[in-house]
Length: 404
Image 1 (tube, helix red, strand yellow):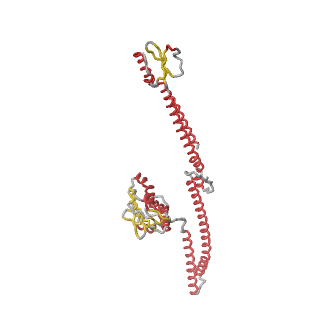
Image 2: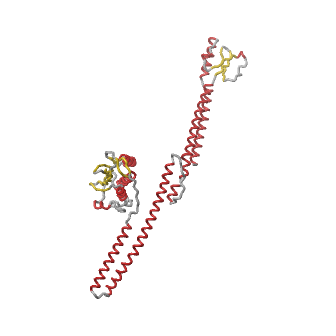
Image 3: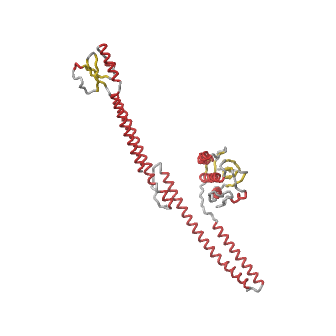
C-alpha cells in the first residue's frame, strides 16, 4: 500500500510539472508569436507607400492609433509602436486565439488527470486494498493455521480468488481429518493384531520348549505338537499378512468427478502449459493430429495424469523428443505420451505403477515414485486404464479413456 501511495504521489508531481511547463511554454508563445509583428511591418509599409491602410487585411491587428491622437503609450490591450512617414503609431493586436489554446490544453489535461486519478482510486479500492487483506492468508495456511480469517470479497477481481482459497482451506482441513482418522484406525488395527499374535506365539513357544526338553515320549504327542506349531505359525502368518496389507493400504485419497469434456480442450491446456517451455529447451514437442471427441472423464484429473506423464518424460528422457499421439479402440480414446532416450529396463515395467517404486533409471534423479501410481489410481476411478511399453529407445505410456 505504501509503495502504491508513493506511485500516486509521483504521478501527481509529474502531472503538475507537465502542466506548469506547458503553460509557461504557451504563455511565451503568446508574446513571442511573430504573426502580429509581420502584420505590423506590412501596415507600416502600407502607410509609407499609400498613406492609408485597411484593417481587414491584418487579422491580428485590432487598432491603429497615431501619436497625434495623444496618449500613445496608454492602452489596456497588447500593443507595439511602429514608425511610418516620420510619425509613431500604436498598433494593438489580439491574443484571444492563444488564450483559448491555453484554456483547451489546461482543460484537456485536467480531464485526463481526473480520469487517471479516478482509475488510481478504483485500483486502490478494488485491487490493492483487497489484495492487502489477503497477503497473510497463504503464509498462515502454510503454517497450518486453518482458522485464519479469509475476508469475503465481492470484487470481480478477487471474489473467485477468495472463494478458491476457502475451498483450499476446506480441502486441507478435510485431508487433515482423514489423515488423523486413518492413522487412528491403523494404529488400533496394529495394536489389535499385535495382541492377537501373542496367543499363537505363546502356544508355539510352549510346544517348542516341550519338544526341546523331551517332555513328549509318545510319537503321537510329538506329532500333535508339531501340527499345533504349524497351525499357530499359520495363524501368525495370517496376522502378518493383515499387518502388511494394513501398512500397504492406500495412504492417498482421490476424488474423481466424472463428466464429459472434449479432447481438444484438454490437449490445448497441455499445449499452452508446455509449448513455450519446450521451445526454450529446444525439445521437439509434437502433438499429432486427432479426431476431437467427447470423453467420459474428470477433465482436471485427466489433465493431471497427462502432466504427470510429461513431467516424467522431462525427468527421465534425453530431452530430444516428447510427443502425444492418439488412437481409438473399442469405445475408448487412447492417448499416448512418448519420450526419447528411454533407459528403463523392461523387467521394471510390471512394477512401475506401484506406490514408491522407482525404476532402474532413477539413480540421481529426485522423485518419490508416486507419479505413475497416482495416474493408475485416477484412471481406474475414471473407469479407464493405463499401461506402458518400451519401443526401442522410446518410452510410451498410454491412457485409456472411455468415450462419452
